[in-house]
Image (cartoon, rainbow, N blue to C red):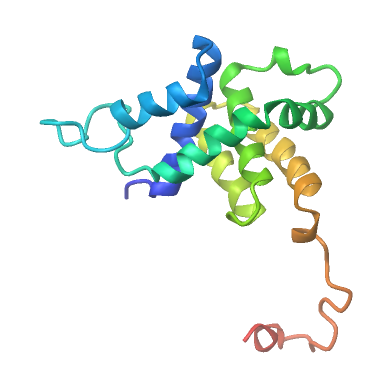
Length: 174
């Protein structure tokens, strides 16, 4: 089963943010490079090249990269608050930093996927890049950012579970 277009967009966004930081290039240049060379059909090659993300959702990819870049100072400030004091943001692996920025940017954007979906997606992205404790760190930091940026998604309704008899939970969901 191949990854879904939105998942590929998130992977591409992390890669693009990494590339932009390492190459010290603008988000618009890196978006253009990715759309021309890594996303979409490659003439004569059918898009099956290693690292090619032809099925990625270009609008989502572009929105994440732009938002992460435009809101980087604010997102980085929230990341710093979510990290232990012994882990300054500059000490982070650059790919990990890109994952935090992409996830933070997507959480920042109203009207997108639910926070829990975003966290899970970036946790999966982290597993693709890291085999150590980094995915757990991604989960913890993005969960903290989600609670800061989207508190309503985590608030329990005042009457949660009220009036539902044990064994009838399924009836309450219908």
